[in-house]
Amino acid sequence: MLGLAACGKQAPASSGSAADGSGAAGASATGLRGSSDENYYMCVFVSGVEYWFPVYAGMKDACKQLGVNCYYEGTTEYDAQKQVDSFESILAKNPKGILLSPITAEAFNEPINRAIDQGVTVVTYASDSPDSKRPAYVTSDNIKEGTAAARAVAEDMGGKGSVMVLRNPGQTNHDIRCDAFIKTIEKEYPGIKVVADIATKQDSQAGYDAVMSTYQKYPDLGGVFSPESVSITGAATAAKELGGTIRCMCCDTSDTLLDMLKAGDLFGIITPDQYMQGYLGMMSLFIAAHPENVNPINERKALGQNIMDISIDNGLTVVTAETADFYYTADYAKKIGYASIEDMLSPYTVD
Image 1 (cartoon, helix red, strand yellow):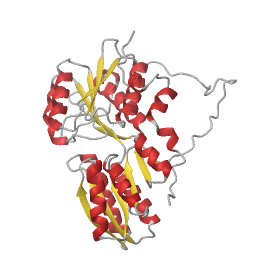
Image 2 (cartoon, helix red, strand yellow; image 1 turned 135 degrees about the vertical axis):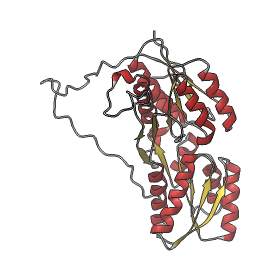
Image 3 (cartoon, helix red, strand yellow; image 1 turned 60 degrees about the vertical axis):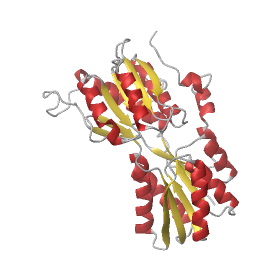
Image 4 (spheres, one colour; image 1 turned 135 degrees about the horizontal axis):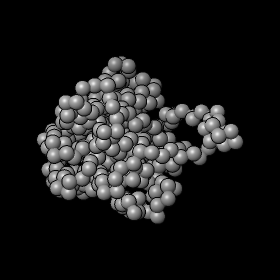
């Protein structure tokens, strides 16, 4: 049933060669370095969620190259106040910078502004606090994610039937994905109706119940979209019990979802390039923390303001059953040289 192609372009072959010295294979770039006493922290919510792990791996690689220290921290719960408390605990250590995925935009406006006023740089990734003073935001294009999911599901449905959305209200990036999915269906596929928009709040059982109850009312239900990786597990289980004709699609991977995808129980997964999100996030954080290294053509440095206000798209990929094996977190950790996921999440400190 799945007819998706991964979103990626083949890298062009280098025109240089090791023999002539132009574009020599394996050549390493050098030059941009921080101080060995600089500490940078990643601050997450629900710290055990697999999504964050490759993001931190990207941040960690950037810190190794920059010669600075990094640490993975956050709350284990999905609770705004507890993540703010974790952020405050990090801030009390007076780090050079914090790479933050805020659980909600509003909860972090004041803490981010206070951190920056204190001299601690904060860059957001995955989710944002756009009204704060943060100088950069790194994410995949959430509108593209929702749009791609809508088109994939709708095309496979033949442009007819009903679809539903499982929502995680209040988390900005998730809301954008859901809104884009609905807008695309309504605009481009008049033969498909969005019959339910249910707040399942990253709960697998709620996802299961939502699909079961919606199917009873709308037996032509052909598609389910979730902006996250938890509710969809229950939704896909319900879809399988109902005959396996409902296409379940989500954003973000987990080992459980990859297994379901390979087994044919999940229609598809859209995932941001997590590693590049962390790597670009750390590079942006370092640049913002060291304004002396850059000279943008604007008035901000002279006025003592953030030297930049940028958004970076880290890219996304549609994961299929054929490519799923590339995304298992434990295998990935070993592939890039770590003994385990725990080793990958360990602090990096400059010797």
